[in-house]
Image 1 (spheres, rainbow, N blue to C red):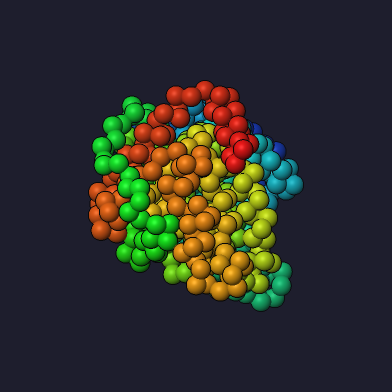
Image 2 (cartoon, rainbow, N blue to C red):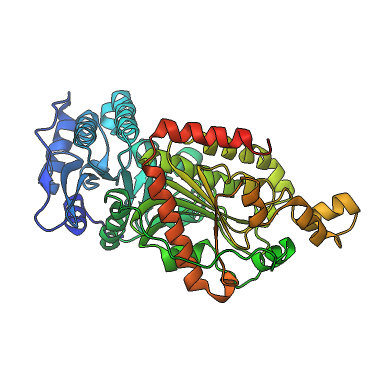
Length: 491
């Protein structure tokens, strides 16, 4: 496939004329005659003095630092001089408070420099970790090919990771694998598209589309939030005209809007992410988004057939929690699940442990959090996304340890008493508010499925108002109030 070199990539991504190189004379490293000749030939062929280009520019006026591999320079390999250049650029971006776009295209460690070159990945990784610890965006665009130690260090640490179509991406290069084991590596595994399907990368985009994606991401991450938005005045929530069972039935309507519609119809803009980043893809929606000018990380349970939630979906949720904390952005969690996946795979995948870890992560997360009961809230996977600073509920949202049919099966050994159990357990939004579990009920007039656009706008504005209010609360006070809130429920 045709390759986009480092300078061409910068020209595609950055505003015209904005790029300023940070590169200085490469660090001198010991080189015998053969290696010295290889370096000289690479410089003459590419016009580059090393295998990486670094610098800064702007994207729609927003400043951003760039580190990009030049594959045609000794296969983009990383030796001591290249590693020093990368590390200095990352450090400079961190000290300047700049988002950083890293774009590897590399065969990995420079074999001519041996183990010393191999260890350079440690200092690059340390610099990336320091950058992320400063709550600065680290965005990765993997180009063809990216393998070896580069993929296993600075190529795999992005808050967001995008890959080039058709790119070879993998830890052990296929040529090395075949030489070592005497047969080819399985076809189709080490491709950008396959890794996206498995949740290792978030998206597959051609170089020409990276600028737009980066612009959308920086608009969420980098632009200042708006002030507290006004919320739509709506009639009072109906009281006696709908039972808990009516709420359950309304939440299960196939035409009821869900988190995907919320993003598409009611956000100012969003960037969808995908998977756990660890080889799994579940049913959780993960996105950077803005609602009424408020930037957030949004994660939501997707309304799918059956609506059951497995351990991979909860690991996606935990990735979203970590992303919000890493970028110092408020987190919005949308709950809409028919309950846990009940299967051998779910048990062996550690479903119960993932519920517990979600609870532990969320209740101690050091950013503002807002949970939204948008529809069904059944069982542990719903509970795993509840303990936020503020909890909203759609009028027909509900929360219960089991679906009412399951509770009926336990208590009455049938499912016919489900309506009775729904009322007795206090699962409906109005009951949850009376019990101090829900703070705000978002009206449905009379049902979200019958007024989807108006309901989604109402919900988005309410989310934005809650996020804006939480941003004004000092972090220690917010955390103390959250912990106090969940100690007192039921007392």
